[in-house]
Image 1 (cartoon, rainbow, N blue to C red):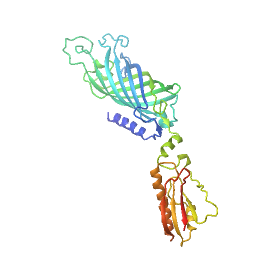
Image 2: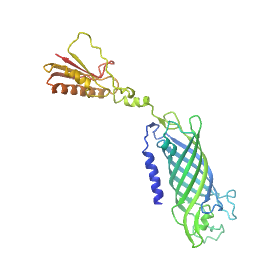
Image 3: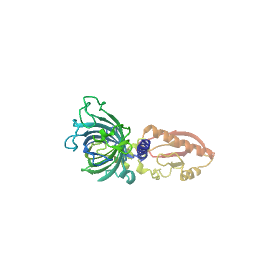
Length: 364
């Protein structure tokens, strides 16, 4: 039991380490609903009669690798599914609820390209609760004993481990058809497993010494899943494109991400105007480049100067005002370090649509 718990924790932990640079992370994004049906079998004895299963699944995608699945499943024990003489009087013999962690192995190891692959494999594991519905007066062989047997309503805590073989179909891969084999392990011990093995709850029985091991049930189902549309306009996570990143970054910096490469700011200074030194800064920068320092070194140490700083119009106004002030401060500190006297400093922020990332040093 401890090993299984550690496996589930490890599956969840490793999947969450995958980078999630995708949009579609709102609470109501990446939900899906699916139905499934199949059979269960006793792994200890494949000849033991077994029943059918049917269920409904709700899945929430956390990342393209990690998702959480909530599964409701019913086990059936009717004439069509059982071939032994003493059949249960119930149509639904048990109901189960599972909370599973699912790991998309294809996206984990191969990377997510922005849309699901045609074929994918997912590992699935979780813990569940099962409620059995045996008739209260029925003994382990289906014979009415007048109510002398103990209560036949049982509760079980289970672990489920399995794989999903998924085929993603549709124009936007909104449909998935799956084959889902799994193994179910019961965490408790049963003193009278004969009844449960005949009910489709697999019990490993060592008839030689009368000891019984934990239940182990095999299950295979097939199902279909529909993925609801997300806020990004698709039915799955969408890879964030550079233009989408830009819209976010532009709120806090001056230029779009794709324009991060530093380039010389072209500022027209009228010919014949002497005594003005133009110091350029990089995008969202307040550090002096070697070129800027060379220009400031050309100013005479005996000069008296005024400093005016600006920022380009993109981005937040308050942020740009602070940025222009930092640019003024770094120029002032550099000049004063050379012995130049600074008479006046003005940080203007953005001064019109043509404002640039510059500081003007004017010699008086």
